[in-house]
Length: 388
Picture (cartoon, one colour):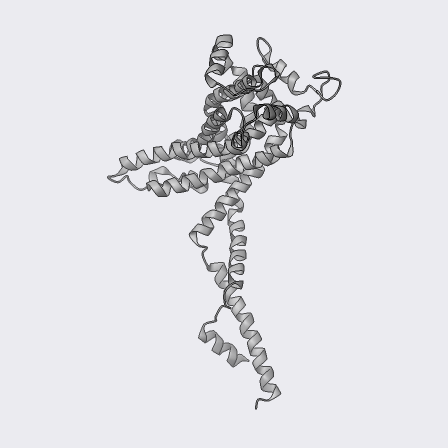
């Protein structure tokens, strides 16, 4: 029969062993590696969330610029002084005393509903997340490297492994992936964002009337009018931000001049002078397509052929590309999209290690609760028992 002293000693030993097991498990957690699939999914989610918050904040702050750009790329302005006409339409307060009778600096922000805030967040987060998923899936399927990210952009391409005998085939696959990934990302981004963009263009009440008149099914209502032009524009911008900018910067930018500052300006320059130079034609097509859909105060399905022919007949190439249209598009898009490569590759990685470490601790804490208590090595148990 055991004595009270022995019972007390056994109880104390059990507590010490339990606490030591927890400490041992915690130490192991700090050094353990997450399953590759879990770590990859978390990092993609972290990066996508960061892009979503960054994009939503800057897009809301830039609403006046966006409205000016939308009007400049529509049929509502024409002839001389198009920029002045667009500014007047942007700040016209139609809520007081009739349409356009009074100016208000708050007017461009009044068209922003909760759907737009959510859509902005989803637009950039989904764009980043979907591109990462597409990039990863296509890279695995085709057996080619993923797009360079973060510190990889600062590496010297001269240190890359020499090309193998199958380099030609690998390059062809890389080109295919470089086109497919942003195309898929751009289309999915438009599924998320186009409806809210159309709502901001027409206003909440006018767009609701158009949806009722069109009588589209649920799928059509999700895509909203002018989806094709919107997806084409997003494909161009996704290619610029996630493919052309990082690849060209890593491969061709002078190694001795690579830095966070140079990446910022390089990304901005690619957006202004490459991406937007092409995307402005699709932006103009999108705006004119919406005007075509709302012609006569009603609502009708869009014929892109008719939109293009009508625009060229009335204004020639200026219907889809002018310096003011390009400049307005740059004002609207460059603050977010132009700085996206810098934010994605230089700002997000700063906190990536700390956030991943916190997630790792939470992950192992949760998995440890679902499993039997961690066992200490026998040598540790004997040592603790002797000390007790």
